[in-house]
Length: 440
Image 1 (tube, rainbow, N blue to C red):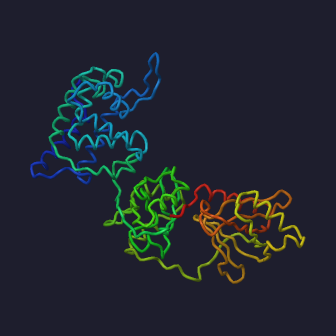
Image 2: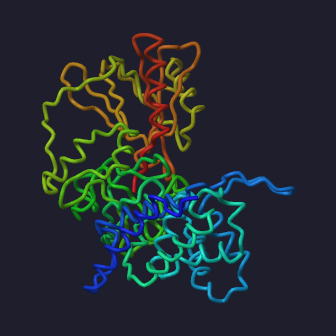
Image 3: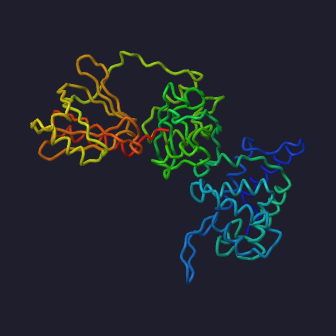
């Protein structure tokens, strides 16, 4: 069998470049031109010939590189020389913000490089002679000679100084490339003046209010990722809890960590964030334009054309402290009730309007003058619906504040031109709930 492999040649070439840089006492950082190639090659070697399905008499499981790297140290704690590596494994287990085993594997590789112990898992694998269950014999880690050569390369790596960013890890599950990350400390406030929408377990900033605290800072842009708020990592589990996280830091500066959509110097959009923006149907060019304008807000012309569904704004009704679907149905029945005993809570309008359903919310304007009447964000809309015997009439409940803290709701009622159009409007509002934008 050949004792050579193209990946071994690649990894040796990267290490030689690192050694050349080490002679001028320059630590290897994430931005080093050779580090990306080095990291990707390391990952390829660890995944080459890996046997993912582990079947035993008592256990049937899926194994990846991260799993065996953790398992192997748990089974070899008697070796005191490997305490440094074991400490790295213990730390990665505590990184709950890392998305999946791929991100944990990459973070562990970076941490081991900084602690000069990346050779240790390979050494354990060889000393315990347990590579056979994990790798096929023709792979680098499954072959005795190739694994020995790879181990000698990693021993060389352990003599090189690395200065890698372990905090910037939110996108390690999709790329070794790092986005720009900034930590900000904003003045104590009840609201930052931003709205976020969740997709792929990340909170994308979809709106920055011009007069809000975040806008005044100048570093917060539409399309950025809200990674941390007051030292709490933000993901899908944070939905509906953002205001509570804000209140937990009352009267103290608000700390946020942002993953920037674009690189400041080049203005280039970070690839994985571009995919998130497309999922949320956010115009990528509009996001990039913010950086070209050096932080100045784009002024929207006042005479902007208004587009939407032609509907009649029938009424609005105060439905009290509850804003669920039953309240919408109750409001629709009240509208049809002509008894004087209920007229006090119904404000009839019967006004032709254009209803526009957008990405962050909906708004409607006067059909004749084109003047905006009302605008409601999805985070303030609690429910929508209709009743069977009024198929063209529909409504939604909304409050002046986000639903999780609202104490009073108003139901706005409309009549569409056709039953099909009413159904389409309700469906569109429903889709808006799925990408609800939460105020912070």
